[in-house]
Image 1 (cartoon, helix red, strand yellow):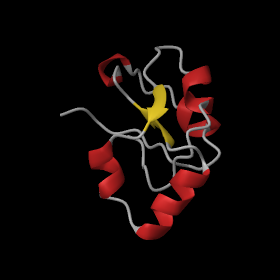
Image 2 (image 1 turned 180 degrees about the vertical axis):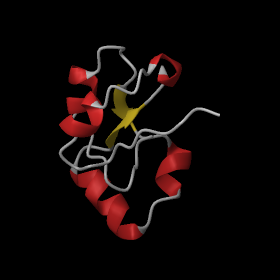
Image 3 (image 1 turned 30 degrees about the horizontal axis):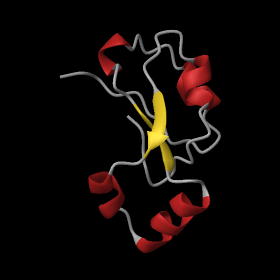
Length: 80
């Protein structure tokens, strides 16, 4: 799970993920609208880029992304 309040879209997660779970791209409008004013400003300063997990089902919970993220924006979550 990626916390958009912390993610700066640097892409370290995508680089280290052996399962290609992540995609760094422009934040969706719906996700952007849920952020507070300070998070929106921070995101604009970082090019409006965040990490999404379109291939989350491929995750093997190795934790490489958690360790690589400089913003501590990623947590591993159990699939329901």
